[in-house]
Length: 428
Ligand code: SDX
Image 1 (cartoon, helix red, strand yellow):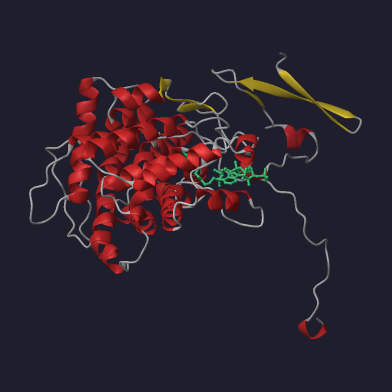
Image 2 (tube, protein in one colour):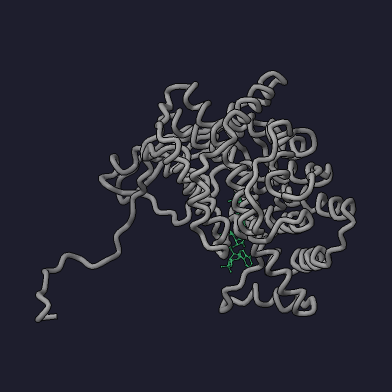
């Protein structure tokens, strides 16, 4: 294949360079398009055909159901790694040695206390507030308590910002959950592992010694790994474009949390459980909901199905589905919702509407079933997604700043009124 693309507009022809990635993906480099064609641009709502950047963090192939973080296959990471190891690999490029991991964890523990005044912000929220709105606000508020801006040319300052947020974010997550459950805020213990301590901070009751259930700890570790990054998805693109204005890491992360909240994105895991509950209340009538999902006049979509990139199975969904079976069995939990989910999946995978549109279960379809079995409230499901996605957002923000990418500022095609004179109000 030649390394140029030829474009014919009217009687003029243009040549644009082709670029190829390390996995042989090809893009037309249009950086020179507008300048060389006297103002012609491309238009691609939702960026279905447009790359925003070159990235070395995550590779996925939607047709083949491949997902790798820094080249490591997701199946091998989910099976063999810890969430902290995967976080290190995403942020710094390679799986850590034992010494690197121990130092990373020690540095994170140093930073895993938040200013007690953050509780005043938390107290100001009504109990009915959605945890994602609280988490986004508290994350942005961290800037107020850590005002020093980060010189992204300094590896040391960037590393310090990374361990700061890796230490403080789980505390904010636990705060949002304990507010929802009406439990006093607590800190867990630095004697514990990274994920073990998350569980203690979230679940420990004031009147009992909390003991870590290894089944729950391993399930959470795996779920966080599966959510850790996913190249240029909606919330990650939001973190990158916000960060491209050179606003700080915490503020950029706060924008990503808000984007993830949407039911078409990370909010889907909560919407899936609510949908499955509705089906259960409806006597398990999955056919009615399948019909609603196919009815163009009905805004209802089958939550947890479909994906912008995976036009085959989502490799994460396969792993989570297997884990859901294992966790519920190990915990001795009988959840009729799991059977409804499996029935819905079976029906959808044989329904022409879904097959033609290549709509398969995605990462959100089964994850809520495990969170529920772990005792996590449904409104906290997307917060758990954000907890997993944190290292991916950090890695993507760090890459964007280190590559000195320009401020994100898309063009548009104007379709409004042509020039017209002002008319005074008495004449309108
Ligand atoms: C995540 O991007 C990422 O990587 C995201 C994520 C990550 O890790 O960051 O993987 C996490 O967000 C997973 C997706 C979670 N969202 C949901 O489960 C919500 C339900 N899914 C849909 O809303 C939808 O599938 C999207 C938003 C996920 C993808 O939408 P697209 O790519 O814009 O596809 P589309 O809306 O153009 O749909 C194509 C067709 C349409 O029908 P036609 O117009 O061709 O007739 O498929 C239909 C859609 O109506 N369709 C669905 C459907 N999803 C798509 N119909 C019914 N139910 C659905 N779930």
